Image 1 (cartoon, each protein chain N blue to C red):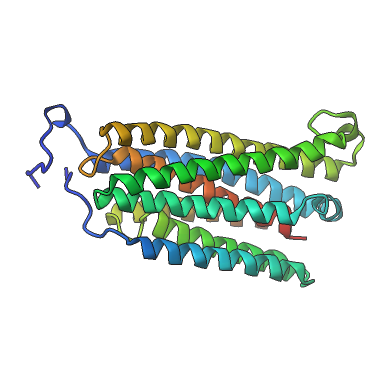
Image 2: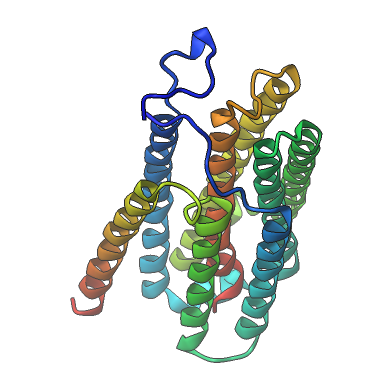
Length: 95
Length: 207
């Protein structure tokens, strides 16, 4: 199979910008959850966490730069996991 | 693609793509392990909202925030070390790996003080205080110790992996032409960061 090395090498600057973005998102989560928003608190915190997770997967874990097969595999696993969460959620909400 | 660009006799059967797919498959099992725990946590939180709300106030947001930043920076240093290796810059690679190891150690020290504070108040799995707590409180703290503890174990494993990688970069066995180990250890370290990204809001922030 292909052993020749990847075509795109993310620059140091890319990583530093991504890091600053992640720190900014962390600060935003802390600020948002310090305000009383009721149920939206959890929703906002989880939404931002998912966004941060996506950034880590795409940039730090190279899904954006690597062969597409990794991206497809990760998407499938996340889809399965989301399905399990949704099913569990409905189970507890309507029992 | 018949051409193999790096012709080391010992590497005749080397397959970096397959090695990375193997690492990802392992990471999926880890995601499902922690994912299952996240679901357990969410369900118990849904069933004991008041207890979870009060118990979560025992945790220091500042401490959690500092540790989040430490892990994010350490993830960036690992990412930079991989970019450096791809540019054949061995010195930066090693420097960044050392930085990552130091940050990981700082994370564990913080965790030590955080847990230590709880222990001093008699709050640890199986303690008398823990047994006297209400069901909801007990669930919150048991899950807290179990999930952050399991995450801590992953930090230690990640440190071992990165230390081995560092030694191999130093000896030249991991180099600009062959660095699958560095990439795979890096993936593992990012996973540890990824898990913490969800642990932090779940335990420290939402109420």
